[in-house]
Length: 196
Image (cartoon, rainbow, N blue to C red):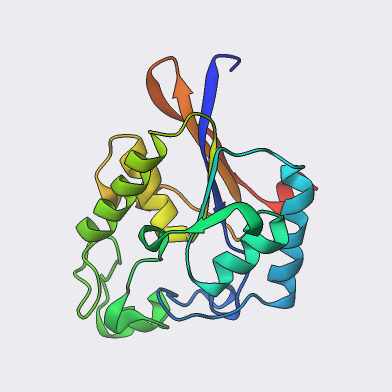
């Protein structure tokens, strides 16, 4: 893959109590667990001082703390476009809990009362991609699972719901780039477990 040019480095925040419990965590500003803090601190070693032309971070605490512990808070800019999906009435619930009332429910195919439509999240993702495309050199994005999965789908030319095809663990690193002129995934969901 010597011709692969890396452009976007996607870095999901470390573990929170809600992510560990598989609860939909949109705008609720939950902190990292001690394990999540260790995961985030480990990113400093994994990234090994990787230089970025731009670092963007979600304003939510779990992403900001991950960015700080990874060693990039002094160069990061906060981006509202990297906020996690607003899950509306599904905030804080697990898929299993929701399916007790709606057996075929999926966040990817169901409207989100009092929250964001998937198309709105896709528009935010496209704005991040457009902004990053003006930057010469690699761009780091510290954010959340669903926004980063939707951003990946948009990067590859898929509809936002294509994000359902990608899974992201906590404190995972993924890299999107180009092979010649084609947008591709260079690395995906590289987690602590794989790295150690």
